[in-house]
Amino acid sequence: MNFRWTSIAAAGCLAIAAPVGAQDIELPKVIAWSAYDTGSAGHAQSIAIGNMMRSRFGTTIRVLPGRNDVSRMTPLKNGTVDYCLCGIASYFAGEGVFLFAAPEWGPQPIRAVLQAVGDYGLGVAVAADSGIETVADLKGKRVGRAVSSPAIDVNMEGLLAFGDLGWDDVEAVEFSGYVNTLKGIIENRVDAAFALTTTTVNYQIDSSPRGLKWLETPADATEAWARYAKVAPFVTPHMVSVGPAIDPASPLPMAQYPYPILVTEAKQDSTEVRNIVAALDAGFDDYKDAAPGANAYGIDRQILSWVMPWSDGSVAYFKEKGLWTAEAQENQDKLVDRQKVLAQAWEGFVDSAPDGEDAFTEAWMKARGDALESAGHDVFFR
Image 1 (cartoon, rainbow, N blue to C red):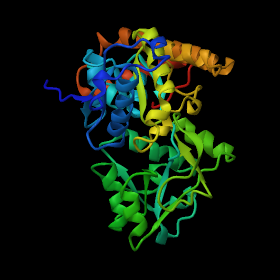
Image 2 (cartoon, rainbow, N blue to C red):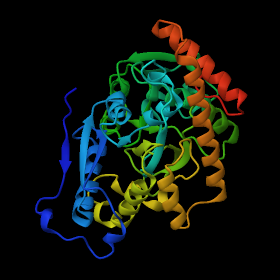
Image 3 (spheres, rainbow, N blue to C red):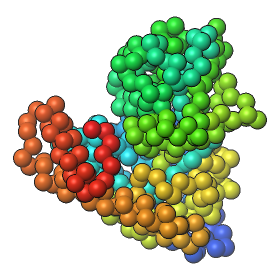
């Protein structure tokens, strides 16, 4: 496989001495991670972070751009990189579901290093001329479905559950990808689709004759949120202030999850991880305004009790900063045990698994669910 690397280093930085205090954070000369492709926000953030790391700590970030979830996760799995700046697919990899419920994958020992928790949100984008006011109003309406993207599909399914609906309650219109589902609103092929509020095509919808409206998912709708989280356990309530058709002075109650997420594997040296997190915190002011959304990596924005366990190195730094709580430790212990249960279930399953992609996946998902249930863990993505 031919890899296309991007070396992130500020011009002329080679002779810059590390500032006072940087000697307390020892880092490798080169750190390799995979990230989103050139031109994406995630890649731009990598550049901003890399420039800071080079100028302050003399460390070069080598970035391997990837066009999709698998191409970003594969280098982490095979050891080409030690870190991945990934999306929610990294959580799916840890769970061994969707694209990762396959013989060459299975549940991966993924650990979070640092999250980007921004001001954007996610929810249902609808045509303003559709008359749709609430998620429940989607019943019988045309809703875009991205058949090639499990992450997009499960997000929309969770939002439908918020309105006590499922795919059978709407007219699902299939598209080849995420952006095309949103373009379907402009083309009057659908009335609604899942979206991140900052996706570029949303601005086109807003300026089109149909207009743009966002459906709210308020945090105090307890029963609706319970249904939502059962389908998409990685989402959390969020007041959204960024995106077209959103007044920053009047944020909308919607949802969010960290994106991107810097992840590694459980075996990664915890001291190195601690020092990377410390460096990203110490140099935060140097890169937070250097790329769109880079301020989302602030140490005070981290969702400590989430669905993905933290690297031991990250936990060590959170403890140093006085951020780690008893609740976070309880959640961490539960998630680490969950990974062990999944790994043991996979080990006992894979050698005697049935042939054929569909048969394999079906059998694995049953074995996975049985193992989690027996160990007292919630079962998602049956």
